[in-house]
Length: 223
Image 1 (cartoon, rainbow, N blue to C red):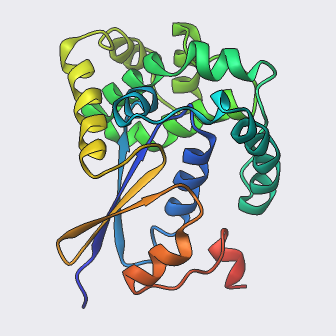
Image 2 (cartoon, rainbow, N blue to C red; image 1 turned 180 degrees about the vertical axis):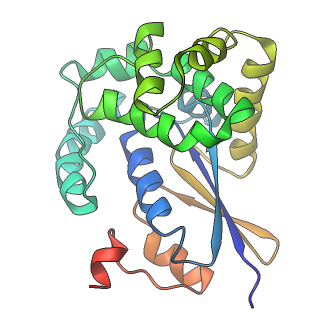
C-alpha cells in the first residue's frame, strides 16, 4: 500500500476562495490517498508580510472577483453570497478575532475545527452576518455543535499570548513556503513540499499526487 501523502490547507474565513478550497479538499479526503491538515492562519498578516495587496484594493481585481464568485459558487456548489458592505466587512473589520477563535479551537478541541470554520464562512459569505463580535463568534460555535460553556471558555483565551503566537506561527509557516495569499495548499510529496495557491489548481495537484480529479463534487462524478 502506498504511503499516504499530506496536504496542509492554510486558510482564513475572510477569504471566499479559502472556503472553496476547504470544501473541495474535504470532499476528496476519502477519495485520494491523502491526509488533510487544516491550518488556520491570518490572511491580513500574510498579505502584509509578503508584500501583496488585497484584491479588493485593486479596482480591476475587485471587479473581476465579484463576477467570478458568482460563477465559482455555482460550479463548486458552495453557497457564496457577497456581503452587502463588502469593503467594510472584509477590509475594515477583517477576521483577526475570528481566526484567533478558530486557532483556539484547533489548539484545544480540534474535533470542532472543521465545522466551526464552516459556520464562520457561512455567516460572512452566505448569510451576510458579522464574524468579529463575541456574540457572532459564539453563535457560529453553537451552530457547529459546540457546547456554550466550552465556546465561552475558548473565546476568553483569544487574546492570550499562546493563541496569538500560534496564529502568527501558522501564518509565518506558510509564508516560509513562499505563500502570498490564501488558500494555500502545501502538498508534501516524497518529503518535499509543493505550494499550490488558490482554489483552481486541483487538476495539477491531483496529477502531482498521482490521483484523479473527478470534478468539484466527486461523488456526483461517480454516479
